[in-house]
Image (cartoon, rainbow, N blue to C red; front, side, top):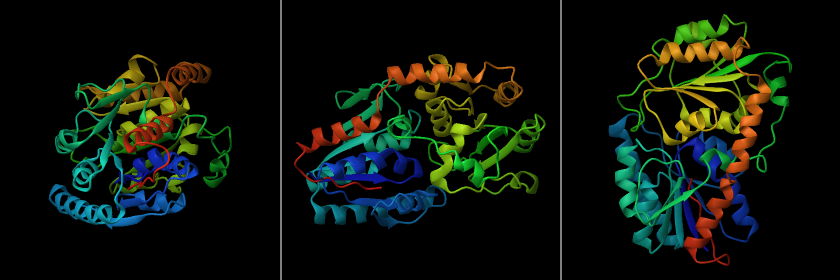
Length: 354
């Protein structure tokens, strides 16, 4: 079978990496295509995944349109040469557009209900749209719901074992308390008009006052005081660090969900609510989702209570995570099953585009 998977974000690399490995183990031929986006290409290199870079980074919506057009044209050219059976992606704009032009099926994975531009550009042209069962919205007969989350494609315990040497990399001892934070630049198409914390400096100061070491991850330049907390760690080590963290506090939904899969307390701060984050909050008590007008204060209260030991004990968080794992599936299995089903069998070749 031949498949094309398009990945244009670091998280997409994590999502597909085990599926690519499994497809190759089943003697499928895998081709990976990538667009420069944050650390996406760097992650492909670190994981030893062969790939082709089809387009560079974008800077703003106007630039994004030009980069996306370039990416799709180059993907179309390569797909005509490779003649794939299936093209797959997260979001899947390029995959959904290119697939029918080369006689392929497109399998799109997505979990972000408010990404209107991406949905309008991809869903009408996609053959199959795979969403978590908690996805808010009916896409019609092409929708396949599965009991899981994107993050379980790479953080399911069958796929991930935390490496404690990450603590050595940062000069930490096992008993050291630390928190990981994330701040968005709000430049993505689905983030326009949204916001999270009101004052980043106050967040770092308040968390530091608990005696906890604060690591900052951010997509933009920061004030000198906060910049001094910026995390310096190779990107493939991030999930190891999150596993050992006392808490995550940030504006990134994916990182909040990753912590839920790891049993690490998470505080999500964003004017946008998402189906999967809401479920992780209301059904499993693994994330505090702060979306309202008082989200800044509410989030800091939750974070400080966790770090001061006034929240539930760590074993309770682990028990909540164990319940989630018992009720949800290894999503890499879903990816492989959907690709082989769309491609018509396990004796054909697969092409993955990153």
